[in-house]
Image (cartoon, rainbow, N blue to C red; front, side):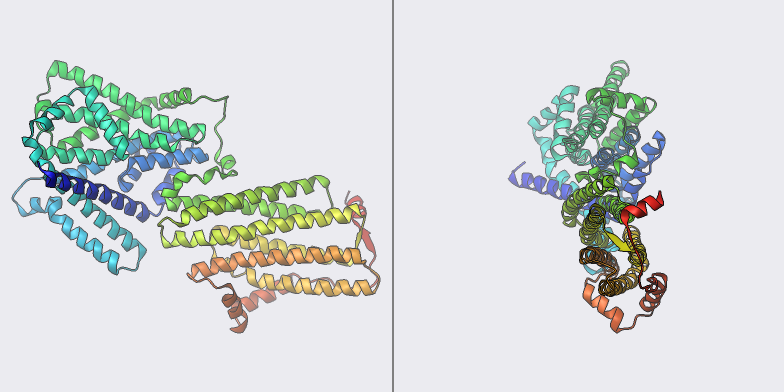
Length: 609
């Protein structure tokens, strides 16, 4: 074996690893997050968890990716540790699909059908189809399918290149002696674990072992311990991802480790005990790619069947390893109120990361709506404790904006489907407007405090006008937030007509206030407060308009707020006109009445009591 064979082997390995990455990435994108979302809604049935874990891993071609994703689910509280066990078991079975695909390279036969089954025969066709899809298709789904086909072709070419490059090693005695050394179960397991830990993919390390089988120097006696070690080495990825995570996330990684480690020990003890009695002759024979796939599958099915009745024991072992003070499992509802759902592990799965961002943004909107409702209520019946509540809620919204903004920017650099890209843009543009609405809620409650502390009094007419104004503002916030959460562009179209009505209400209230000043029924001091309130209300409606317009423009893949708003007025949009008149009739200020008495806030509170 000369330097050119070594270069061919290194090149083949590079193509193999890259092809596996491209194919897995394409499969993950093509799934659009649907398979991952199923894992979120998993029931407590462990068998269903095994089946789903196997299915998802078979599709995305990586047990490490599935396990890391599950660690993220547990860390964010979406999934309990008990439910994660079944998925981890299934992931180990699903990862064996790759080895079966790679074993096709070992098919022998002269018939046309058999020869077409060999990857060297059909890979060029798949590569050609994939390249055509990538170059000429405009649809994202077809591009994803093209990536899958090209990735598979590159992977198989890499496999063939490695196999061809290592064949001369069969004539090198030192290489043969090396694999004879690996027949020692302990040394073989260490070698397999180290290789897999380095490249962080059991599928890739099994593929490399299958390529080495082309030399004929790898016996089943050497292959079996190496495969066992590869299953232990793949746990490293999950363990690394759990660093700095919560205790239950760390426990999930240890569940994965104990599943493979103890499963491997039991399998090896039983296997070599049986060999001592039955003397398996196949161990001395040369291993084949298909034989490697069989051993890999048999072990993972055995380990799953072994642990299935005792899955609770895996959880207890993990809890004993990572101890705490009687920490209770957090429910989904509790966890979703925190920012833990924005787990960095999800960044490699943009579809599900976007879904997490939508959930967190919905919580942010909910806190903002609650703060605004509380603040508006204080204009009628002020409570000192509510002021602090609104201020605290505004602080929470600030934290949401900061974390969401950072996470969305990180996510923006990842490849994702067009729909997810639209959602990301809407969220990124909306969180600032939501945060500003919470700021105005604080302004409103501070205005209520000033009215109460100074024992000021609005006239009954002003109070009634504010109630109409407040109702309109509450509705525009509710409609815009609901449109954003559901990505309903049709609902978003209702926001701008209502925002126009709110502007009209603001102008009319200012005129009426000036009239009351002239008549001596209001003071300059109250005028400043009322001006602040109407400004806050108008600004809130403007922020709602920003959210709605962004959603509408994202739906059309266009961004131009001013152009859109101008078109509504210049083109005489029928829907806009009808909704405007509908809201105009709904939010009508009461008739002007001269000489309306003032009623201070303290009096109103006593009347309500």
